[in-house]
Image (cartoon, rainbow, N blue to C red; front, side, top):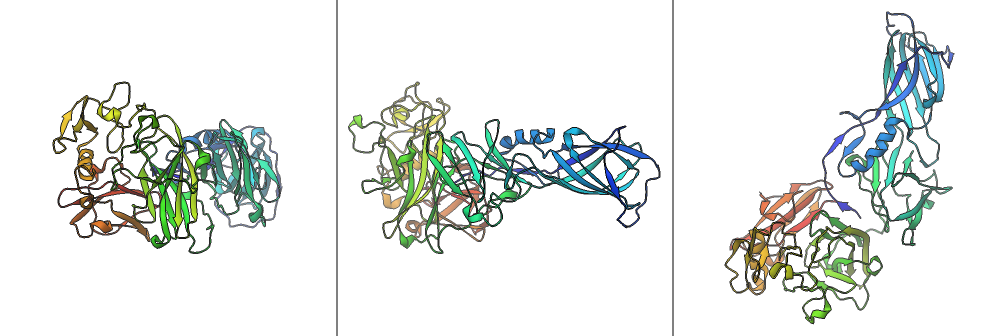
Length: 559
């Protein structure tokens, strides 16, 4: 699946083909078969000697798309295209003189700078520059269709070109080798710097062979993969970046280039998709989306977290872990040696039960992980027959931090400067150790601000302190807590409703579109009616009751 982030984009485009005037000899043929309309011929009669070269220019109002986190990956490819090193080497042009009906047929290689002599006049130029390859090619193919005026003594004439291919970039260091089978032939993808790539003329398969097409290869750990590609469609003039090839192709792309993937199951069949969001923060969000969602047909839904990708499966011995601060308080520990029975996070896999989050999509803050480590994420659902439906596997690398090796809240209460300081409730890093909110179990209604080295809990914000007071069973009856709102999207509109347990309470729902899930205190919009959303948006919301209790944040990635 894909990691979800909404970034601003700027539309940019195609290239310019520049005809540079030189004093050289022509290499062309002509015929006298056209009878076009007679446009005005330039007054300065004479000849222009030109050769063809390609330059690329990023300018507003054209057809390529840039921007977002993937544009940095595309940049070196674009630089190579501007230099001509990744453009199709040869060209074939038909140059028609609109006045004399003379047609010149020109072919050659850009690098050879073959010279051409043209009389002054108005010309219609059509043609192509096509790279070799049936389904994939190592260079970009181009098309031309333009009317230009050539004057004697001109220094250059500019043509607007059209991209005749799309660009696929594999951005994964985990891949040892990868090739594309188009239903007839197999060909390795091409290598540039640390990337595997291919320019795609139409599809990744040959005509009539879409059902047999696939990509296959080997990961660096020795495991193999094989991915069906006949159900993927690409838009010419767009680039596509693949960051993960765990079980299926994941293509984070720009707005003009969304992949159309045909449904894999029968109508009405449950299908689970893994979601990972806001991976640049501590903690990040992970969960799932269930196609054809029906709450009456689902026993459980949740997300698995592990440092071992091979362990992301459920069996008869699986223990389902309750989420923290969701009706039952458990403080996790890092080592079994503590002898505590509350919660141990040393087993190979953490299976978080997110059934308490209502709706077809659920996201949960993945807390209490180690810093600077790879974690593997996989969503799951168990239907009413006991069948487990899995989502794709995703990998997340955590931020660099140093967690104390005993109780995970050690650094929050009796913290040592050697260890990172975390918020008790959200597990976010408290950067400023001299400015935070603090309180104690003995006097939870008293909160201080500043610096308190021991015997108190630390909170990054006052709202997080209030969450602790509102949600902790030691301070509040669990029947009185406020639950996170229910979120759902229908017809491109977001619906927010109080949780079933809150229907009799006076509830206000605050929300934010593409805000920060950790900064709910900044959610300024009050929900009153369904609002418009679009693909890629991340909506966050929380409930507030009239007696000043607040819920945890609920989040939704618009798919």
